[in-house]
Length: 142
Image (cartoon, rainbow, N blue to C red; front, side, top):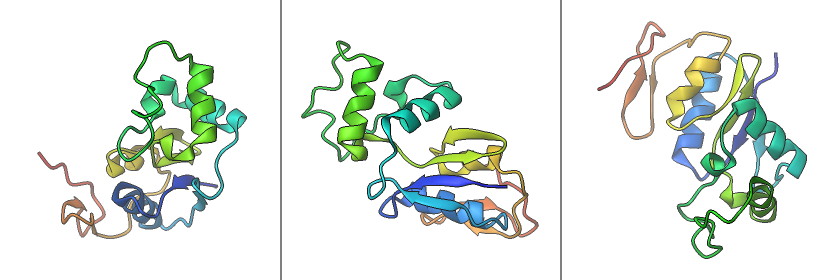
């Protein structure tokens, strides 16, 4: 069973997602996408299997999104993917691929829906929010 995370270690959401994967007893393949950017074909594949518009995979904060004028509806999906290939920071993260599905895991606990193995221990996110209780059950916060 292979789980892959497209990860940015500088991102708290990405770090929490990686920790949740590991809390299920699985060591994923970690692809630091800023160092090893996905190919155009891989980006197209990820968007297709997530069944999401390309625009939803674009990250706006702390990226050249505004500078490049990517909010303009003139850009086609292919052109937007080309921008992500040229500027990997534009790819929102983390994206996780498991045997149960592929998902942009924002918030980080979205990964729980596609992990094949249960959580093994309590988990508290970096911001102090408890996500998993001591019995390994998901805590539903309001």
